[in-house]
Amino acid sequence: MFSSKLPFLVLILLVLSLNVHSHLSPNFYSFKCPNALSIVKNGIAEAIKKETRVGASLLRLHFHDCFVNGCDGSILLDDTSTFKSEKTSKPNNNSARGFEVVDHIKANLEKACPGTVSCADILAIAARDAVVHYGGPTWKVKLGRRDSLTANRSAANAFIPQPSFNLSNLTSSFAAVGLSFKDMVVLSGGHTVGFARCTSFRPHIYNDSNIDSTFAKSLQQTCPPSGNDNLFLAKPISARSKCESNMACGSKLYFLLLIIFGLSLKLNVHANLSPNFYSSTCPQALDIVKHGIAKAIKKEARVGASILRLHFHDCFVNGCDGSILLDSTPNFQSEKTAAPNNNSARGFEVVDQIKAKLEKACPGIVSCADILAIIARDAVVLYGGPTWKVKLGRRDSRTASVNAANSFIPQPTFNLDNLISSFARVDYRLKTWWSCLHIGSAHTVGLARCTVFRSRIYNDTDISGGFAKYLQKKCPKKGNDNVLQPLDYRTEYTFDDKYYKNLLYKKGLLHSDQQLYNGNKADSLVKKYSKDQINFFKAFAKSMIRMGNINPLTGSNGEIRRNCRKPN
Image 1 (cartoon, rainbow, N blue to C red):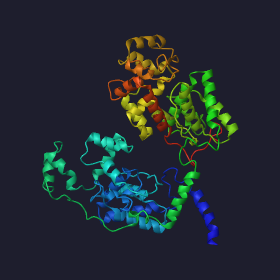
Image 2 (spheres, rainbow, N blue to C red):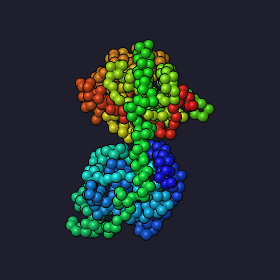
Image 3 (spheres, rainbow, N blue to C red):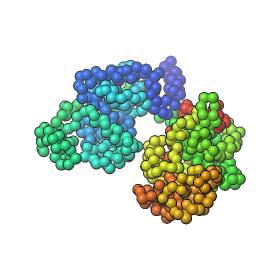
Image 4 (spheres, rainbow, N blue to C red):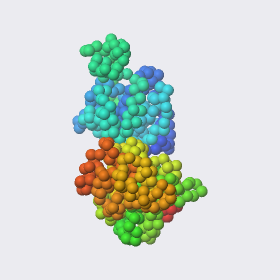
């Protein structure tokens, strides 16, 4: 009887596992283990009551875990015959601690909800609860992480920030794992609690000049030039525990689910974006979009640039979810009315026409968000630019946010720091100035209104005098607000390196464009791309892929709109 029901059980578990791992969520365990958060909270409170320091140690474990191949609980694993534990890496050896608290909490969770709560999630919750217990802030921990099956000692040695790091080292270290300069400064505040060993601060108190002398002398009394290396170090934990062995971390049911989830990745086409997403469900999708945009550009050369801009403005507002295409409803105001889009965002009718053809060919299959992503690529190609494989599988938002559009879409008045911050706020992968450089170069095609560049041609000093006078004839100080001028002087419908050449001669139409060549760190790349179109094309394609991956809705999130202008 059991064997006859097992396939049915496996099928049920498979269906349940299809979408729950698509996104982290504060409610991940609401149904599967509703008392999970309470168990962790009580465990932390009990541990800190027993030893005050241990909460800081757990906070540090979470940091060191996330800096090595992501927040996957790998720091908790002991050595095996196939890998060396991260506990023995230089930043952790004889200093990482609190493992026994995780073991105790994991044991309690296994009794309550066998094979449900990951070790990685325990660390994330414990870090929050420890901060709260010490009187710090609280936050909703997003949950749903799964545990790594291996550890990486080399990565731990390479990526975990060191106490000897200078500001540049720290910034680079945090950037390598997707954290901004601000994140680095704020998260360093985690040192408001906890202890450090003499070996960690000895060079600072004997060699550095940027330390209060009285403070240095007081520390030198307990941390001499040699000896007392492990001052404040608690006795290392040697007992083995469940989360210290990848084969013991969880019950047999956990591994059944793990195997089933591995299989489900092949079946769950929404788990990740893929260039082949529509290969079986709508094989003609890419051709329909390609023909639609080719026809539209033939009719009006400018429209491809307009839709490329739509994709940008869509992705910068809560991710690439097609929200920019929605009209206003009684429940929300359209992003089309936001300052960066009002009376300037266009090309919606082209999207409508392509969507209508896709609905005839493959009803309810291709999302509006994916249409924008494909069109952006095809328009660039039609203008003579590079191609790339568009990753597909986005779903459409059911709502829009005019406030987010006003807040997050980069403005033509931005300087370089503003641009970098703007890109970083929407996604850590775009936090670098070269992402601004690559994606901003889409201004090699298209037009801009007088109202957008008027301030620059009358007030800026980093502009060619002849170029400014030429534009002033087209765009007076008052009136002619909607007069259009090419974003890329003289080659407005050719995707090329002239955009960068114009910047070298101070002929960037927008203030934000010229900021990329204005005596700053972006200058060298502008010069490079002005002479190397092939590398520019490669870099642009890569950055477009990154941008297209900003917070896509997948799985059961969002919907596939039948009409891109309104929710179903």
